[in-house]
Image 1 (tube, rainbow, N blue to C red):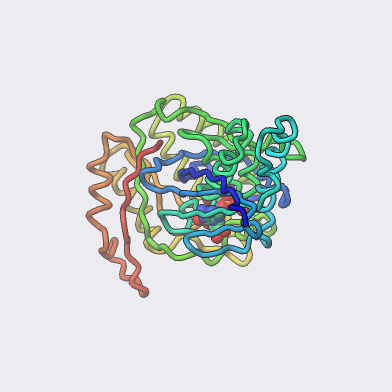
Image 2 (cartoon, helix red, strand yellow):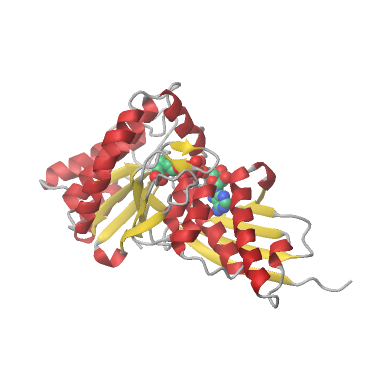
Length: 355
Ligand code: ADP
Ligand code: DP6
Ligand code: CO
């Protein structure tokens, strides 16, 4: 039998950590959000996904292997939606250039690895789907822009649309019912505020009990705080956060970041049944940030928590010693004298600069 050609492309994608949180869908099928959101893309030197996509007539069907384990791709409508969009874009290229190999008709093999805990609130779905979409777009040699690819990645996981760009990135909720205007947009490049830094505090590498997808649906359906967050709190915070970034005003950036994280977790607690993503170590980290800021008589660091107990702390380069030093000093120790029944401790402090 003749050898079947294998076409291949690999890419990496970074995580992004929201400073104004996406939480809530207005359209489940298209994965459209109830509100706009804003994030900082972290350096790939810290947390990243590495994905290889290949096509061959020798493969028996589409497959996805994540961290060495085969995934059930057929039951993931959102993964299938990404693959079918990318295939139709490739098909359009093949129909105008007959010299191109007909990759759109071949099975796809996707192999992906996260170098950080998956499904633990460190944005694995963001880096994961950004890498998946870009690896296949590279394999198919698609001419689409990052904004166009963000529209596809959004359908895999909402937060993924923001990982296709570096620096400070907004996901505009959009208003069209087909989702065509629900895309990511760079608010400022990393060079605009090169002093920005982040550390990641790993409190637990365990898979969360309630996925982001499921958690936000419960919140939308049951929380009475949620409509206020979506209608008034977030829109005004989006404006003030963009101004804080524009003016490189760390104090405003930090306060809005912390308040928005708290607001999002408050809507989780207000859901029915309630959802808890933060734990005692997370809350100890919150207290420590407020202690550091109070002792410094100015805001030098800000915490934020996605849907999980792990914290990301933003700070400026000039405060590195104080912020990183303080968190490293409590590594593995009881924090604020708290003795957890499950032996929970701060497990690691990973330094990561913004991209
Ligand atoms: P997280 O807080 O880590 O983003 P989510 O609940 O949003 O957690 O999503 C976790 C899910 O995202 C995983 O169970 C998996 O289905 C998907 N995912 C994570 N990493 C990847 C990846 N590299 N490639 C494809 N899908 C991924
Ligand atoms: C708390 O993007 O993981 O991290 O669209 O259902 O895949 P799906 O959800 P996902 O939700 C992220 C929620 C968040 C906030 C954020 O990243 O903006
Ligand atoms: Co996620």
